Amino acid sequence: MIRRRLSAHTLAGASVMDALDPVSQRRFERHLARCRECAVEVSELREVAGRLAMASSARPPDRLKEQVLGITRRIRQQPPAIDRASRRLYGSTQARPRPIARTPRLAMALAAAVVVAVVATWVVGRPGAFIPDRRTVTDPAISAVLTAPDAVMIDAAIRPGGNATVVMSLREHRLVFAAAGLRALPASRCYELWLVDQGHDSPAGLLPMPKHGMSGPVIATGLQRAEQLGLSVEPAAGSHHPTSPMILLVTL
Amino acid sequence: MKGVETWRRLGPPHGSRGVKGQRPHLAELLSRTAQGDHGAFEAVYDQVAPTVFGTVRRVVRDPCLSEEVTQEVFIEIWRTASRFNATKGSPSAWVATIAHRRAVDRVRAEQRSADRDRRAASPIVAYDEVAESVEHNMDIERVRHCLKRLTDLQREVVTLAYYRGYTYREVAELLGVPAGTVSTRMRDGLIRLRDCLGVGP
Image (tube, rainbow over all chains, first blue to last red):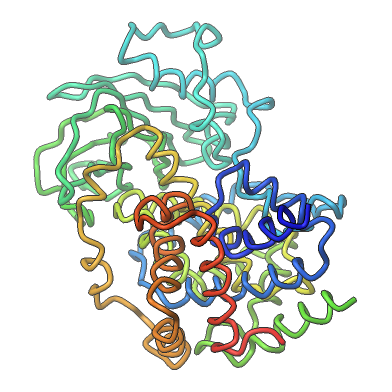
């Protein structure tokens, strides 16, 4: 008994560094619930972890700020937590993906499109038939677009191979993009989205590296009427203007 | 009660003498953010973006993915600002907690899709040497100084866990050390850092 308690106690360091597997984390949290000194220690060690974070500061690309501010402007905030027990380990439950229960059908359709496109033909109008991928539909910014009343879905082929699914909302001035069948790129390259208007290209974000050929969904903001969406391969840090031919061009 | 007192000491009053421009008003800005003040949120972004992006990129490595995760972190900060509780810790630690957990969640999800090999191949020094560390100030120097004062094993387990996102079992495997030893060294390593940094009692 004593041995077990001591052992759980030593997990404090690993816990604040997110270095516990889910089973150990639950065990540690059970221990924490009845160990007052541990709560103090955890809070202190969390501050230490915060210093470690600060020590690796790096300047983010400027465009990221606009993206973040553009998206958050349209996202509803959570009300304060009432249940004290749920925030004993502050932040411990916040970062986990939200449950899928309230996700609308269109959100499921988009996530499913990514999953299904590689194995089957995309059937417009039957979104309910697809099985959603839990991880991809949980982002609130993405759900905001998918639930917009004027959301429209477009499916298009990527030239060397692959398939893109776009859900856009002119009302929200933004779109959600996901792709399947993308080829892997070397570490020095990255897929970049572009909004094209009368020959003018503006960067619309970098795609995460494809996993099993699938990438996204990601959000592009600043969408106007009569534009096209492009995709090209760029240096990993992204470009201000496309430096290679578009491998996808969708008229929105 | 003791816990509350300690938190208070660690909170905003202590933090206000921290990194240049980093913490003086962060708690206040978060509370205004929680009330829907988007201008305050923008100021939060300006203050913590380097910490968030730097931490995320260090764990995630892939530049494209790091941007995406950073974006997720700020969406979460915006959505959950009302959950920040100044009596429970400093605002910068709250932000760092969200950033690090998001980054780690992402690399573990990636790992599960068995797609991390290529990224893992890029040497970590590439990032350590990036001269983009925006704030070369006293606090950062102090963290580095204190890291040097750990034993080799303490430093190794702390940096592998925090900066590379490994679980303690993975660290144990990597170093060929029992998992119990690793978790113990993680804890006493952080405690030594705490004392060296002057955080806590």
